[in-house]
Length: 132
Figure 1: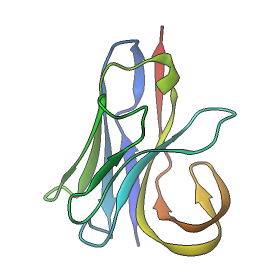
Figure 2: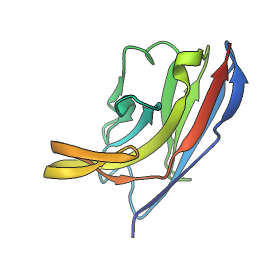
Figure 3: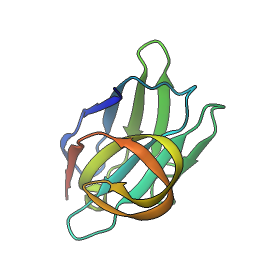
Figure 4: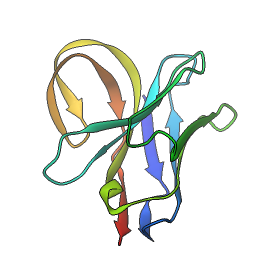
C-alpha cells in the first residue's frame, strides 16, 4: 500500500521560509515522478514542483527561484524548501506520486477532475499560511 504523509506546514510572516516534507512508503522515486501541489480556497489545484526518476525537476512560474524540491533516497522523503513566502502562497499543500495514464476522473488536491494523465497517489495535505 502506498502512503504519502506531509508535514512541515505552519504560519509564517511574508518573507519567511518553510520546508515541507513528504514521507513516502510503498513507492520510490525510481518507480516514477513525485510532486507538490497546492490549493487555496476557491482556486484550482496547482502544480508547484515535480521531480522525476532521472532527477528532472520542474517548477511553476510562481515557485521558480523561491522554492526547491529535493529527495532523500535513504529516507524516501520529498522536500519542498520555500523561501521569500508571500500571502499568495497560502494554501493546502499536497504531495503526490506516480504520474500515469488514467483517462478518467481522479483525485486532484482535495477534489477530483477528469484528466488523461495524473498523479495516482496523494497525501492529505499540510496547511501553509503566510501573513502580510
